[in-house]
Amino acid sequence: MKEIQNYDEAVKAIKTAILNSQFDAVRAVNEKQLMLYYGIGKYISLNSRYGYWGKGAIDAISERLDRELPGLKGYSARNLRYMRTFYEEWSFLEENFEIADTVEKKEIVKLESAGSKTETAIWNPLVPKQTDFPFKAFFSIGFSHHRTILAKVKDVKERIFYVIRCSEEKYSREELTRSIERDDYHHLGSLPNNFVKTLPVAEQAFRAINTFKDEYLLDYINVEELDVRDRADIDEKVIENSIVHNIKNFILTFGKDFAFIRNQYHLDAFGEDQYIDLLFFNRQLNCLVAVELKKGKFKTSYLGQLQGYLSVLDGFERKPHENPSIGLILCKDMNRSFVDYVIQDYSKPMGVATYKTSKDMSEELKNALPDVETLRKLLDSEDVTDLHD
Image 1 (tube, one colour):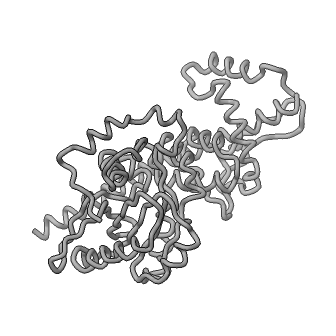
Image 2: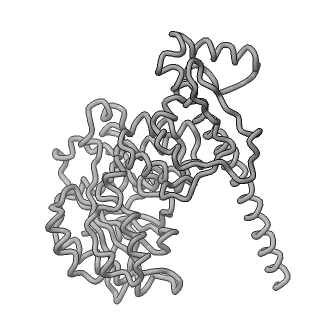
Image 3: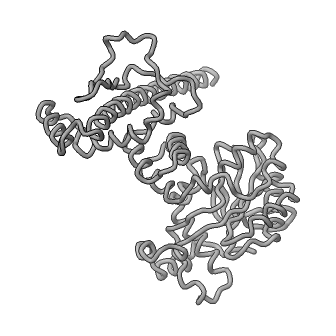
Protein backbone atom coordinates (compact mmCIF):
# COMPACT_ATOMS: atom_id res chain seq x y z
CA MET A 1 0.00 0.00 0.00
CA LYS A 2 2.85 2.35 0.80
CA GLU A 3 4.44 1.71 -2.61
CA ILE A 4 1.16 2.55 -4.35
CA GLN A 5 0.89 5.71 -2.30
CA ASN A 6 4.40 6.70 -3.40
CA TYR A 7 3.42 6.15 -7.02
CA ASP A 8 0.36 8.34 -6.48
CA GLU A 9 2.56 11.13 -5.16
CA ALA A 10 4.97 10.73 -8.07
CA VAL A 11 2.17 10.91 -10.63
CA LYS A 12 0.73 13.95 -8.89
CA ALA A 13 4.13 15.68 -8.81
CA ILE A 14 4.87 14.96 -12.49
CA LYS A 15 1.37 15.94 -13.58
CA THR A 16 1.62 19.22 -11.69
CA ALA A 17 4.99 19.94 -13.29
CA ILE A 18 3.58 19.26 -16.77
CA LEU A 19 0.52 21.45 -16.24
CA ASN A 20 2.61 24.27 -14.78
CA SER A 21 5.01 24.03 -17.71
CA GLN A 22 2.13 24.18 -20.20
CA PHE A 23 0.66 27.16 -18.40
CA ASP A 24 4.04 28.93 -18.39
CA ALA A 25 4.47 28.22 -22.11
CA VAL A 26 1.05 29.66 -22.93
CA ARG A 27 1.72 32.66 -20.71
CA ALA A 28 5.07 33.27 -22.40
CA VAL A 29 3.47 33.19 -25.85
CA ASN A 30 0.71 35.51 -24.64
CA GLU A 31 3.26 37.91 -23.16
CA LYS A 32 5.20 38.13 -26.44
CA GLN A 33 1.98 38.68 -28.37
CA LEU A 34 0.92 41.53 -26.07
CA MET A 35 4.36 43.09 -26.36
CA LEU A 36 4.16 42.84 -30.14
CA TYR A 37 0.68 44.38 -30.21
CA TYR A 38 1.82 47.20 -27.94
CA GLY A 39 4.77 48.00 -30.21
CA ILE A 40 2.67 47.88 -33.37
CA GLY A 41 0.00 49.96 -31.63
CA LYS A 42 2.56 52.61 -30.76
CA TYR A 43 3.89 52.65 -34.31
CA ILE A 44 0.39 53.07 -35.73
CA SER A 45 -0.47 55.72 -33.15
CA LEU A 46 2.58 57.86 -33.85
CA ASN A 47 2.00 57.79 -37.59
CA SER A 48 -1.79 58.02 -37.73
CA ARG A 49 -2.47 60.50 -34.95
CA TYR A 50 0.10 63.07 -36.10
CA GLY A 51 -0.85 63.05 -39.77
CA TYR A 52 2.15 61.23 -41.23
CA TRP A 53 -0.24 58.76 -42.86
CA GLY A 54 -3.15 59.62 -45.06
CA LYS A 55 -6.78 58.66 -44.50
CA GLY A 56 -7.43 54.95 -45.02
CA ALA A 57 -3.82 54.00 -44.25
CA ILE A 58 -4.72 51.37 -41.63
CA ASP A 59 -7.15 49.63 -44.00
CA ALA A 60 -4.58 49.66 -46.80
CA ILE A 61 -1.85 48.26 -44.53
CA SER A 62 -4.14 45.48 -43.32
CA GLU A 63 -4.99 44.51 -46.90
CA ARG A 64 -1.29 44.42 -47.86
CA LEU A 65 -0.43 42.28 -44.84
CA ASP A 66 -3.19 39.86 -45.81
CA ARG A 67 -1.84 39.56 -49.36
CA GLU A 68 1.83 39.28 -48.46
CA LEU A 69 1.35 36.96 -45.47
CA PRO A 70 -1.45 34.58 -46.53
CA GLY A 71 -3.18 32.91 -43.60
CA LEU A 72 -2.05 35.55 -41.11
CA LYS A 73 -4.73 36.00 -38.46
CA GLY A 74 -5.39 38.87 -36.10
CA TYR A 75 -4.25 41.79 -38.24
CA SER A 76 -7.49 43.07 -39.69
CA ALA A 77 -7.96 46.83 -39.86
CA ARG A 78 -10.20 46.63 -36.80
CA ASN A 79 -7.57 44.71 -34.81
CA LEU A 80 -4.85 47.15 -35.86
CA ARG A 81 -7.01 49.93 -34.43
CA TYR A 82 -7.46 47.88 -31.24
CA MET A 83 -3.66 47.64 -31.01
CA ARG A 84 -3.44 51.42 -31.30
CA THR A 85 -5.98 51.80 -28.50
CA PHE A 86 -4.12 49.19 -26.42
CA TYR A 87 -0.93 51.25 -26.66
CA GLU A 88 -2.57 54.62 -26.10
CA GLU A 89 -4.52 53.52 -23.00
CA TRP A 90 -1.50 51.81 -21.40
CA SER A 91 1.23 54.12 -22.76
CA PHE A 92 2.24 55.15 -19.25
CA LEU A 93 3.66 51.64 -18.74
CA GLU A 94 6.48 52.31 -21.21
CA GLU A 95 8.69 53.90 -18.59
CA ASN A 96 8.56 50.65 -16.58
CA PHE A 97 10.37 48.59 -19.24
CA GLU A 98 14.01 48.10 -20.11
CA ILE A 99 16.08 45.98 -22.51
CA ALA A 100 16.96 42.57 -21.10
CA ASP A 101 20.67 42.03 -20.35
CA THR A 102 20.71 38.89 -22.49
CA VAL A 103 19.43 40.65 -25.61
CA GLU A 104 21.86 41.96 -28.24
CA LYS A 105 21.09 45.22 -30.02
CA LYS A 106 20.72 43.43 -33.36
CA GLU A 107 17.78 41.48 -31.92
CA ILE A 108 15.76 44.63 -31.26
CA VAL A 109 13.24 45.25 -34.02
CA LYS A 110 12.58 48.97 -34.45
CA LEU A 111 9.97 50.70 -36.56
CA GLU A 112 10.87 54.19 -37.70
CA SER A 113 7.84 56.45 -37.97
CA ALA A 114 7.39 57.91 -41.39
CA GLY A 115 7.98 61.66 -41.41
CA SER A 116 9.48 61.69 -37.92
CA LYS A 117 12.71 60.78 -36.18
CA THR A 118 10.97 58.63 -33.57
CA GLU A 119 11.84 54.95 -33.41
CA THR A 120 9.47 52.44 -31.82
CA ALA A 121 10.94 49.25 -30.40
CA ILE A 122 8.56 46.30 -30.48
CA TRP A 123 8.37 44.91 -26.97
CA ASN A 124 9.65 41.39 -27.59
CA PRO A 125 13.13 42.00 -26.12
CA LEU A 126 11.96 44.19 -23.24
CA VAL A 127 11.39 43.17 -19.64
CA PRO A 128 9.42 44.95 -16.90
CA LYS A 129 11.32 46.69 -14.14
CA GLN A 130 10.51 46.03 -10.51
CA THR A 131 7.39 48.13 -9.96
CA ASP A 132 4.11 47.90 -8.10
CA PHE A 133 2.22 47.35 -11.35
CA PRO A 134 0.87 43.76 -11.61
CA PHE A 135 2.69 42.81 -14.82
CA LYS A 136 2.31 39.08 -14.19
CA ALA A 137 -1.47 39.41 -14.23
CA PHE A 138 -1.33 41.91 -17.10
CA PHE A 139 0.52 39.46 -19.36
CA SER A 140 -1.46 36.40 -18.30
CA ILE A 141 -4.75 37.48 -19.88
CA GLY A 142 -5.47 37.53 -23.59
CA PHE A 143 -5.75 40.49 -25.92
CA SER A 144 -9.52 40.00 -26.25
CA HIS A 145 -9.85 40.32 -22.46
CA HIS A 146 -7.80 43.53 -22.57
CA ARG A 147 -10.08 44.85 -25.29
CA THR A 148 -13.14 44.14 -23.14
CA ILE A 149 -11.65 45.92 -20.12
CA LEU A 150 -10.56 48.96 -22.14
CA ALA A 151 -13.96 49.20 -23.83
CA LYS A 152 -16.08 48.89 -20.68
CA VAL A 153 -13.91 50.47 -17.96
CA LYS A 154 -12.45 53.99 -18.06
CA ASP A 155 -10.73 54.43 -14.69
CA VAL A 156 -7.13 53.12 -14.57
CA LYS A 157 -7.35 51.73 -11.03
CA GLU A 158 -10.58 49.98 -11.91
CA ARG A 159 -8.99 48.54 -15.05
CA ILE A 160 -6.10 47.17 -13.01
CA PHE A 161 -8.61 45.59 -10.61
CA TYR A 162 -10.30 43.71 -13.46
CA VAL A 163 -6.96 42.67 -14.96
CA ILE A 164 -6.00 41.07 -11.64
CA ARG A 165 -9.48 39.63 -11.09
CA CYS A 166 -9.54 38.18 -14.59
CA SER A 167 -6.10 36.61 -14.12
CA GLU A 168 -6.81 35.13 -10.69
CA GLU A 169 -10.26 33.78 -11.56
CA LYS A 170 -9.24 32.74 -15.11
CA TYR A 171 -12.35 34.40 -16.46
CA SER A 172 -13.70 33.78 -19.94
CA ARG A 173 -14.68 36.94 -21.80
CA GLU A 174 -18.32 36.32 -20.85
CA GLU A 175 -17.44 35.94 -17.16
CA LEU A 176 -15.28 39.07 -17.30
CA THR A 177 -18.14 41.01 -18.87
CA ARG A 178 -20.53 39.84 -16.15
CA SER A 179 -18.02 40.85 -13.46
CA ILE A 180 -17.81 44.35 -14.94
CA GLU A 181 -21.60 44.60 -15.28
CA ARG A 182 -21.99 43.52 -11.64
CA ASP A 183 -19.61 46.36 -10.77
CA ASP A 184 -17.43 44.05 -8.67
CA TYR A 185 -14.84 46.81 -8.31
CA HIS A 186 -17.12 48.87 -6.10
CA HIS A 187 -18.77 45.98 -4.26
CA LEU A 188 -16.03 43.42 -3.55
CA GLY A 189 -14.64 43.55 -0.03
CA SER A 190 -16.92 46.32 1.24
CA LEU A 191 -19.66 44.41 3.07
CA PRO A 192 -20.38 45.09 6.76
CA ASN A 193 -18.65 42.33 8.74
CA ASN A 194 -16.84 41.40 11.96
CA PHE A 195 -14.15 39.19 10.38
CA VAL A 196 -11.13 41.03 11.82
CA LYS A 197 -12.51 40.67 15.35
CA THR A 198 -13.74 37.07 15.13
CA LEU A 199 -11.26 35.22 12.89
CA PRO A 200 -8.10 34.16 14.74
CA VAL A 201 -5.64 34.78 11.87
CA ALA A 202 -5.33 38.22 10.29
CA GLU A 203 -4.61 36.77 6.85
CA GLN A 204 -7.78 34.68 7.04
CA ALA A 205 -9.80 37.77 7.95
CA PHE A 206 -8.30 39.71 5.03
CA ARG A 207 -9.14 36.90 2.61
CA ALA A 208 -12.69 36.68 3.94
CA ILE A 209 -13.21 40.44 3.54
CA ASN A 210 -12.05 40.24 -0.07
CA THR A 211 -14.10 37.14 -0.84
CA PHE A 212 -17.55 38.63 -0.28
CA LYS A 213 -19.28 41.63 -1.83
CA ASP A 214 -21.74 44.02 -0.24
CA GLU A 215 -24.28 43.47 -3.03
CA TYR A 216 -25.03 40.54 -5.34
CA LEU A 217 -26.83 40.69 -8.66
CA LEU A 218 -29.08 37.64 -8.98
CA ASP A 219 -30.37 38.73 -12.37
CA TYR A 220 -31.49 35.24 -13.39
CA ILE A 221 -34.23 35.29 -10.73
CA ASN A 222 -37.65 36.64 -11.66
CA VAL A 223 -39.74 37.57 -8.64
CA GLU A 224 -42.11 39.97 -10.38
CA GLU A 225 -45.64 40.18 -8.93
CA LEU A 226 -44.66 38.45 -5.70
CA ASP A 227 -46.67 40.97 -3.72
CA VAL A 228 -49.89 39.27 -4.89
CA ARG A 229 -48.92 35.84 -3.53
CA ASP A 230 -50.50 34.50 -0.36
CA ARG A 231 -47.67 32.68 1.37
CA ALA A 232 -45.56 34.90 3.59
CA ASP A 233 -42.24 33.26 2.76
CA ILE A 234 -42.81 33.24 -1.01
CA ASP A 235 -39.98 35.69 -1.84
CA GLU A 236 -37.36 33.67 0.01
CA LYS A 237 -38.62 30.39 -1.38
CA VAL A 238 -38.58 31.55 -5.01
CA ILE A 239 -35.11 33.00 -4.59
CA GLU A 240 -33.77 29.87 -2.90
CA ASN A 241 -35.30 27.52 -5.46
CA SER A 242 -34.04 29.63 -8.35
CA ILE A 243 -30.54 29.74 -6.86
CA VAL A 244 -30.51 25.96 -6.48
CA HIS A 245 -31.64 25.46 -10.08
CA ASN A 246 -29.14 28.06 -11.29
CA ILE A 247 -26.35 27.08 -8.92
CA LYS A 248 -23.66 27.47 -11.59
CA ASN A 249 -24.63 31.11 -12.10
CA PHE A 250 -24.78 31.68 -8.36
CA ILE A 251 -21.31 30.24 -7.82
CA LEU A 252 -19.95 32.36 -10.66
CA THR A 253 -21.50 35.35 -8.91
CA PHE A 254 -19.96 34.36 -5.58
CA GLY A 255 -16.60 33.13 -6.91
CA LYS A 256 -15.12 29.95 -8.33
CA ASP A 257 -13.67 28.83 -4.99
CA PHE A 258 -17.17 28.09 -3.69
CA ALA A 259 -18.48 24.52 -3.76
CA PHE A 260 -22.21 24.01 -3.19
CA ILE A 261 -23.13 21.44 -0.52
CA ARG A 262 -26.93 21.72 -0.45
CA ASN A 263 -29.93 23.89 0.36
CA GLN A 264 -31.96 23.48 3.54
CA TYR A 265 -28.99 21.81 5.20
CA HIS A 266 -30.26 19.95 8.26
CA LEU A 267 -28.62 20.59 11.63
CA ASP A 268 -29.57 18.33 14.52
CA ALA A 269 -28.04 19.31 17.87
CA PHE A 270 -29.46 18.43 21.29
CA GLY A 271 -32.74 17.40 19.67
CA GLU A 272 -33.27 20.78 17.98
CA ASP A 273 -33.85 20.70 14.22
CA GLN A 274 -32.48 23.66 12.29
CA TYR A 275 -32.11 24.30 8.57
CA ILE A 276 -29.54 26.48 6.80
CA ASP A 277 -30.89 28.00 3.58
CA LEU A 278 -27.71 27.41 1.57
CA LEU A 279 -24.47 25.75 2.66
CA PHE A 280 -21.19 26.10 0.74
CA PHE A 281 -17.54 25.26 1.23
CA ASN A 282 -14.90 27.77 0.19
CA ARG A 283 -11.60 26.22 -0.88
CA GLN A 284 -9.46 29.32 -0.42
CA LEU A 285 -10.88 30.13 3.00
CA ASN A 286 -11.00 26.39 3.87
CA CYS A 287 -14.26 26.74 5.72
CA LEU A 288 -18.01 26.15 5.57
CA VAL A 289 -20.07 29.16 4.51
CA ALA A 290 -23.70 29.38 5.63
CA VAL A 291 -25.93 31.71 3.62
CA GLU A 292 -29.30 32.89 4.94
CA LEU A 293 -31.79 34.52 2.53
CA LYS A 294 -34.11 37.25 3.80
CA LYS A 295 -36.83 38.88 1.73
CA GLY A 296 -36.93 42.28 3.44
CA LYS A 297 -34.76 44.77 5.26
CA PHE A 298 -32.05 43.63 7.70
CA LYS A 299 -33.11 42.82 11.27
CA THR A 300 -30.78 42.21 14.21
CA SER A 301 -32.57 38.93 14.93
CA TYR A 302 -31.03 37.53 11.74
CA LEU A 303 -27.56 37.75 13.29
CA GLY A 304 -28.63 35.80 16.37
CA GLN A 305 -30.18 33.09 14.21
CA LEU A 306 -27.08 32.82 12.02
CA GLN A 307 -24.73 32.79 15.00
CA GLY A 308 -26.62 29.78 16.35
CA TYR A 309 -26.20 27.96 13.05
CA LEU A 310 -22.47 28.70 13.01
CA SER A 311 -22.05 27.41 16.57
CA VAL A 312 -23.66 24.09 15.61
CA LEU A 313 -21.67 23.90 12.35
CA ASP A 314 -18.39 24.38 14.21
CA GLY A 315 -19.34 22.01 17.01
CA PHE A 316 -20.85 19.16 14.98
CA GLU A 317 -19.93 19.53 11.29
CA ARG A 318 -16.55 21.23 10.92
CA LYS A 319 -13.55 18.97 10.24
CA PRO A 320 -10.39 19.30 12.37
CA HIS A 321 -8.35 20.79 9.50
CA GLU A 322 -10.97 23.39 8.57
CA ASN A 323 -11.12 27.02 9.65
CA PRO A 324 -14.08 28.44 11.61
CA SER A 325 -17.32 28.58 9.65
CA ILE A 326 -18.44 31.92 8.21
CA GLY A 327 -21.99 33.19 7.84
CA LEU A 328 -23.51 35.55 5.30
CA ILE A 329 -26.94 37.16 5.44
CA LEU A 330 -28.40 38.10 2.05
CA CYS A 331 -31.22 40.60 2.51
CA LYS A 332 -33.08 43.03 0.27
CA ASP A 333 -31.99 46.19 2.05
CA MET A 334 -29.97 47.38 5.04
CA ASN A 335 -28.77 50.45 6.89
CA ARG A 336 -25.00 49.96 6.49
CA SER A 337 -23.97 52.14 9.43
CA PHE A 338 -26.38 50.34 11.75
CA VAL A 339 -25.26 46.87 10.60
CA ASP A 340 -21.58 47.83 10.91
CA TYR A 341 -22.24 48.87 14.51
CA VAL A 342 -24.34 45.97 15.81
CA ILE A 343 -22.46 43.13 14.08
CA GLN A 344 -19.33 43.83 16.14
CA ASP A 345 -21.02 42.46 19.28
CA TYR A 346 -21.32 38.94 17.83
CA SER A 347 -18.62 36.31 18.37
CA LYS A 348 -19.01 34.31 15.15
CA PRO A 349 -17.60 35.61 11.84
CA MET A 350 -20.50 37.04 9.84
CA GLY A 351 -21.20 39.52 7.08
CA VAL A 352 -24.32 41.14 5.67
CA ALA A 353 -24.93 41.81 1.97
CA THR A 354 -27.86 42.90 -0.15
CA TYR A 355 -29.10 41.43 -3.42
CA LYS A 356 -30.94 42.55 -6.52
CA THR A 357 -33.21 40.33 -8.59
CA SER A 358 -35.05 40.73 -11.87
CA LYS A 359 -37.64 42.86 -10.08
CA ASP A 360 -34.97 45.55 -9.76
CA MET A 361 -33.76 45.20 -13.35
CA SER A 362 -34.71 47.19 -16.43
CA GLU A 363 -37.69 46.16 -18.56
CA GLU A 364 -35.33 45.04 -21.32
CA LEU A 365 -33.55 42.62 -18.99
CA LYS A 366 -36.80 41.41 -17.41
CA ASN A 367 -38.09 40.33 -20.81
CA ALA A 368 -35.10 38.03 -21.22
CA LEU A 369 -35.68 36.24 -17.89
CA PRO A 370 -37.98 33.29 -17.00
CA ASP A 371 -41.65 34.18 -16.64
CA VAL A 372 -43.65 33.99 -13.42
CA GLU A 373 -45.41 30.78 -14.44
CA THR A 374 -42.08 29.01 -14.85
CA LEU A 375 -41.08 29.99 -11.32
CA ARG A 376 -44.51 29.01 -9.98
CA LYS A 377 -43.98 25.48 -11.34
CA LEU A 378 -40.51 25.47 -9.82
CA LEU A 379 -41.94 26.60 -6.48
CA ASP A 380 -44.54 23.84 -6.47
CA SER A 381 -42.11 21.06 -7.37
CA GLU A 382 -42.14 18.17 -4.89
CA ASP A 383 -38.39 17.86 -4.38
CA VAL A 384 -37.94 21.20 -2.61
CA THR A 385 -38.50 21.55 1.12
CA ASP A 386 -40.20 24.50 2.77
CA LEU A 387 -38.22 27.26 4.36
CA HIS A 388 -37.82 27.21 8.12
CA ASP A 389 -37.83 30.43 10.13
